[in-house]
Length: 506
Ligand code: GLU
Image 1 (cartoon, rainbow, N blue to C red):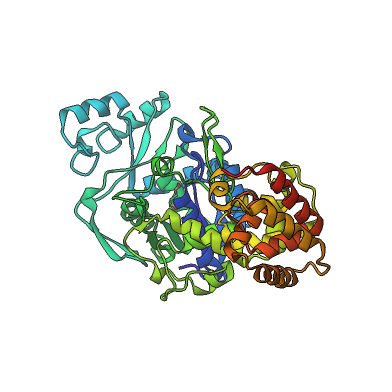
Image 2: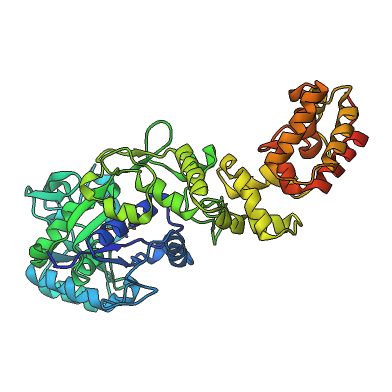
């Protein structure tokens, strides 16, 4: 293995990064940082058919938002540049030739039509050791014929020549030894003359080698490719520096079986992408965690625990904690259920962990939109009073609008239940009492008003419920005297008077 730990996140820019891909990137990052290593972004775009404009930028923006910092990448450069495979075209041909010279690969001229015909004639046809002798390739054709076909401009592919019936062992840090028989593999296409480009398999191996990658951490869906990759390392004679594999467990649907899909998100109402994405072809918009109001710290913490745990039941962990605690050995083999509600819970927790000031800054644009013009100090104190009631910053308005604007209507159900016949008289009296309070702190108001209630022999609940209805317009909100202390004496009196005039007992 190469000395210094180096891992890569190697997405193909075929659309928005799925939340499972984000978890893969996160685990690579945590592993690299834990081991003092490098975290590299490599863009695997050799399949031009599936290229989607904007996808690479999206990936970078999403991971930046989450705080995953690359050491090298398409956007940063680095000692192993370029990092975009389409910019590395010239590098791969040489390695294809190495395999051809070694006899580990061969040239095949079979046209798509010929292959289709073969597949139609032979059930479960696989291009491999048992069938390659029946096909049109450099193993069955004369050397001169091969040259003539190439010179004549016929398209060809280079296929990997996999020997039949060999044991191939993939050593996986999470799964242990996974054994394969080489006969299950087909002679994979490594290179296509049509676009002078390697396929994923060849480019992936050559780049991992040239970029001195030490660990390949990726989703379980790539495990079936791993034996082929091991054989490619062998064919090149690079076994000594072959990276170690770690195939991460699948993210499963919140309910039932199977892989988490975009459809689950649409059906159950949660995003499966980190950022909002607009499909450049259809214009369709898919929701993102960022736009849905998630804090990046919460998303990171939530994802970290989908397939890994620190070995105890600690749940709230900062990026630093995660780096410190992370290990591939503690990743699970079995799929991780995507518990969306847990994601919300994490967001709630992180809102509580952030200072009132930070949350006030996030709340500010929402207030601006509502036409509220209050000092940031006032907003901060309101946030302190209500944030425990919300899981998202956007829910703050619903929980606190009455701190900023007087109610314009009164909830009918509450009026029916809480506004008694004697409420108007009592609230008028209360307004008078309040006029006489100089120290308008929450505690002092409470003392004076409760004293008045007792003296008068009023029912505490009835007074306080009507009071809340007058100030808030409904029966919600934090401690009553915290609200009035915040909005101030004059506003409290004005709201009481307004309620007395406007609320008609039902
Ligand atoms: N380009 C592959 C992907 O899209 C990379 C798989 C790997 O990490 O080897 O995920």
